[in-house]
Length: 365
Image 1 (cartoon, rainbow, N blue to C red):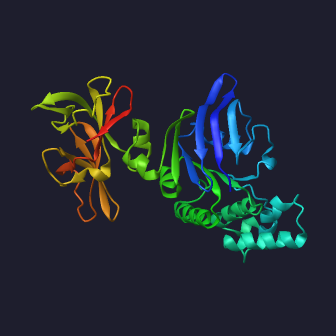
Image 2 (image 1 turned 90 degrees about the vertical axis):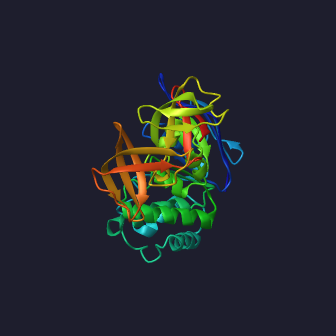
Image 3 (image 1 turned 180 degrees about the horizontal axis):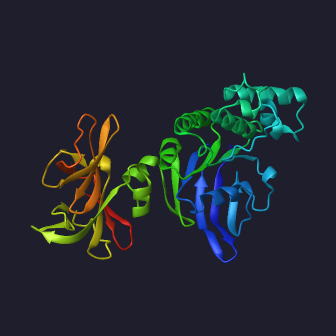
């Protein structure tokens, strides 16, 4: 196992900078997920760690050793790709053992290592099969096995689940998580899917345009996003953002929602860092409930139901509130109909205040 440190890491392609001097420390045995939209620099960062991309500036340190100039084979890490990269003419055993081709192990030791790896991954009864005879999930396990068999100090995963259907993705998420718990090996995992990030990571790294916006545990990012991008990217459905203005009302500072006839109290120092009076009130659909708790400091909105999405334990309710589209939730057995007028509430403490200009988080409300 090993820790991985990125210090001032930069990647340039000519005059274009893809990664802007990022700093990140992955602890020994930690499962860290880099998440963000396409083109944010997450895969480029992973490839620099692996040695598959030249580094334009800064350093990559693995287990205390700067590896900027080291060849990929000399970094003692293993990478699992999106397209599996397994050989169709080889058996499962041959594919898993390919990483041992240049090792000095005896044939008996190689066979033992392959069988041990296959057993961990549940492939022990498939060793004689070719990839064409395997399911997508089994092929992905073969790719992981080929990485595992060398006993690397860290695994790098580059969107390994994106080619699988929804059911297999869920299954493989669980298998990779269990594998990490069993092996305790350091993992850096790249995805654009925030559900994968939330369900697998010890810590999530949110990236945008080659910058790191926020690093934290899944619940830290969900409960306390530092900016609008992170607030909307983490969590599904995405957070509602309602335009508002800071004002004094009844001796209290409030955020008055533009054109929605509602306001939310703001702590006296809650918006002290605001660049002006224009703000955004953020509230997650799961916290904006049809009916819900009422009170003087709760947010109350009434609107017309446009669409409902029954999901079993809850129902997502899409509303038109004064021309603003909002997503709320209702208990699974409460299913409003399109055209109904409903009132939704968000309890105090469940809302976020953002600066509209800087997009930075100001406080909870």
